[in-house]
Image (cartoon, rainbow, N blue to C red; front, side, top):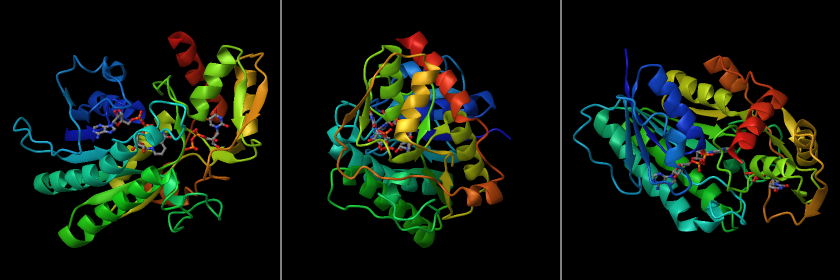
Length: 319
Ligand code: NAD
Ligand code: UDP
C-alpha cells in the first residue's frame, strides 16, 4: 500500500535522495525545507511529479496544511550538518538555527506525528558520541561530548533531540525511532561546503593543495548515500518504538589515507598540506553496525572506491 510521507530537510543532500527513492516506489512525499543549506536544484527532477509536494517551510514553526488528511511516516532530517568554519553552510555559522531545528523542530515533528498517528524517524548523528573513547561506537556508548565547545550547538542539540523523541515515546506513546548517521557522501553534497569529501575532491580536481587538518591520523568511516538511504528506509520499516540504530559504513580510514585515495582516483597533481586541527575534532569514528545488520538485515554494499568514483564524476560534471 502506498503511503504519505513527510521528509524535513528533503532538499538537502541525504533528504533529496530519500525523497527520490520514496517517490519512485510510489509514495506521496511532502518535502519541507527552508533551504538554509539545501537547494531546490537537488529536487528539481521531482518538482513536476504529481506525488511530490515541496514547501519552503522552517520546521521550527509548526507545519499546518489541510491538504494532507493523513501522514503515515515522518523522516526528520532538517539540520545544517557541516562542521567546517570556513563554509557559510556550516552549523558553526548557523549556531542558533542548528540548536532550534534539532530541538524545537524535533518537538514540532513529534507533535505532528502524534496528531497523525504517524511513525517518526529522527536523523541523529555519530556526533552524539563526540570524541569517542571507545571504538567502534555501539548504540549503547554514551559518548564524550563537550557541552559548551563550538561543536556543541550541533552535538548537544542532536543529543537533546534524542531526549525529546525518547520522551515522546515513553510518555505519549509516540511510535518513533532514532538513526545515528555516520559520515555519508555522494552526489548532491553541497559543492560550497567544507566537509572533507567535498574539499578534497574540489581541491584534487583543480590541482590545488589538499588541506589536511591536524596530522591526518584521525579516522572516519564513509558511507555511500544509496546505502544510507536504504538503511533509513529499513530502520523506519522495522525499528520498534524508541529504538536507535547506527547507520554508516564501518570501513575505517585515516584522513590522510582518504586524501591520498581521492588524489589517486582523480589523477591529481595536488600537494598535500597540513593545517590546524579544529577544536574538538574527533580522533576516531567507526560505527558498530551489528544491530542494524541483525535487526534490519542491512549492511552497506558500495565500496569506498566505487562510491567515490561516482561522486568524483558528479563534481567533475558540476564544476
Ligand atoms: P544538508 O545540509 O544537505 O541537508 C539538510 C537540509 O535541512 C537542508 O536542505 C536544509 O536547508 C534543511 N534545513 C535545515 N534547517 C531547516 C529548518 N529549520 N527547516 C527546514 N529545513 C531545514 O545535510 P545532510 O548531509 O543531507 O544531512 C541531513 C541530516 O543528516 C541532518 O540532520 C544531519 O545532521 C544528519 N547527518 C548527516 C551526516 C552526513 O554525513 N551527511 C552525518 C550525520 C548526520
Ligand atoms: N578535514 C580535513 N580537511 C578538510 C576538511 C576536513 O582534514 O579540508 C578533516 C576534519 O578535520 C575531520 C575529518 O576531515 O577530522 C572529517 O571532517 P568532515 O568535515 O567531513 O566531518 P566530521 O566527520 O568532522 O563531522
